[in-house]
Length: 85
Image 1 (tube, helix red, strand yellow):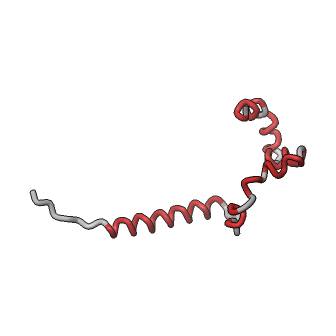
Image 2 (image 1 turned 90 degrees about the vertical axis):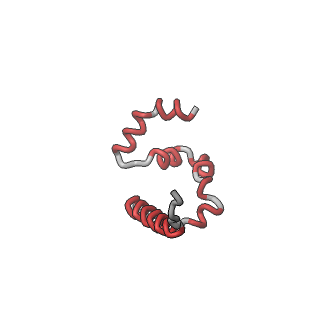
Image 3 (image 1 turned 120 degrees about the horizontal axis):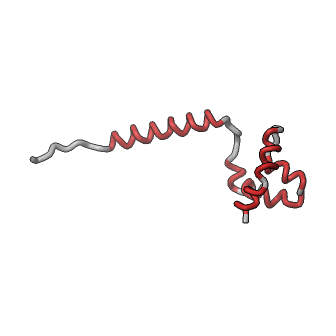
């Protein structure tokens, strides 16, 4: 079970991250036979969509900007009608 494995390896994960190592990359170096399994999510259409690796701040700023545009566009579609009360 993945959850138990991660809980049982917390000390190892802390040690690796304290050294600036990414646990997943370290695991792939130890077990190169698992490389394709570990990188399967990058194969195919998904990898073709990745052009840049952006900092988190840029990603969040872009998401907020896009959401703001969508809300403004959506609000322009709403028309107020006078109540007949």
